[in-house]
Amino acid sequence: MFCFQCQETAKGTGCTIKGVCGKEAETSKWQDLLLSVVRGVGTIQHTLGENASKEVADFLVDALFSTITNANFDDQSILNKVDTGIALKKQLLETALSKNITFPNYQEVHWGGEKSDYSAEGEREGVLRNENADLRSLKELTVLGLKGIAAYYDHAARLGETNEEIIAFICKALATITAPDADMETLLGIVLETGKYGVDVMALLDKANTETYGNPELTRVNIGVGKKPGILISGHDLKDIEDLLIQTEGTGIDVYTHGEMLPAHYYPQLKKYKHLVGNYGNAWWKQKEEFASFNGPIVFTTNCIVPPAKNANYAERVFTTNSTGFPGWKHIATGEDGKKDFAEVIALAKTCDAPQEIESGEIVGGFAHAQVFALADQVVEAVKSGAIRKFVVMSGCDGRMKSRNYYEEFAKALPKDVVILTSGCAKYKYNKLNLGDINGIPRVLDAGQCNDSYSWAVVALKLKEIFGANDINDLPIFFNIAWYEQKAVIVLLALLYLGVKNIHIGPTLPAFVSEGVLQVLVDNFGLAGNSTVEEDIQKYIL
Ligand code: FSO
Ligand code: SF4
Image (cartoon, rainbow, N blue to C red; front, side, top):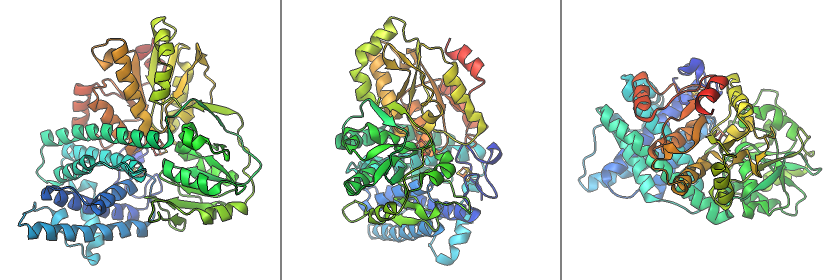
């Protein structure tokens, strides 16, 4: 196996024996096979020059999403997706033949899809099939960005928002990276265009979320527990938590959010449910201990899954849905009407003890663009009077590595006149530190999930207008992003597309960015890693 798609990759270069995330070599091979089928389907669809059918769009989105770090560890689930893709590929090839359309002579297009050849094809089609490090890097940067796009698209589509242009771009980008002779210039172009569609898909999801559930608003979220049994819901899918809240109403079961589901509390149409009682625990990587003490069922709507220890007391209580999967865990399918039936989860919850308290108190959030605009006069006044010296965007992910303590220390070391703009699970490093406020404006403004980084782009553009700045980079905003998996990759590409320069990413630079490509990103965008807390504060804040 060879996988280098996340920040925790082995030795900072690539997992070759087993994933640090727990992914087995066999699973990695099936994911490589699935991605080759995805490239084949995307290329043929692009060559056809017509809009993809719902089946093709659903397949591409689901398959890309399921190969995101920590999303799906279930070989059978991945192989089922391979079967679906091969059937679709055959249909598309027949359409092409009937129209006398010739398609490119690529392995991914012509491979016949024989089951006996699945393993060999998976081996052939891994990341290292591209020998040139720079070309490989650009191709991977593109496909990892597409995985992020697929994740966000999936959530938006589940709320009824679809967009043919985004799907057409996914196909075009897949066709571009499948071409064995694609050159640097073409590939750089497609990487940057991926960023454009990153902006589009985040806007699509923002529209879907806010039109369905209202604009996030300032909310205090309880981090303690109640006395009733609870269901813990993790991941990013708001439709799932809504279905669960409706089905648990009046049953005597409480619902708690976990990890990236915390921002569900900020939406008027979700927070109205009285039995949505709080957020339990922290970022994804602490789940082994926190699931054990939660006592009740846990539902994964998306990544990030950590494989449980062999003697884990909660393995029987975990359910997956959507693109996620784990061998032995129950999977809840989506019904014809797009809804889920959580009856089994609710029945199990009724037999469980209430969660054990691990924390108490409240955290504050809900500062997506509309809430920030509502505070605009106050914010602008504070900037003009000098009460706010600077904003630091610290969106992104949290993770296991000790080097991530940088972000907690950085937050603590910031002067008291600096405001942190956050989103994604990166916030768990500093959202319980009580960093205070500036004239009533909290010093940690949480917009929501990682895709809500979109809010910070919207806010930055608004500030540019208010302050009459020529360039977004002239604003007193420093970008210090923590990354872990591929949704952070699309957020980064989106920010680059919007013209944001001098972004710092950490705790380490991506292994999939080759030296040559890094140089291009440094030269054109001022992209940089981080240094020590002291040095970075001195250089970029003071
Ligand atoms: Fe975190 Fe995991 Fe949202 Fe990622 S839960 S790491 S960037 O999936 O998607 O922030
Ligand atoms: Fe390794 Fe990350 Fe890939 Fe898992 S997702 S195999 S940890 S690079």
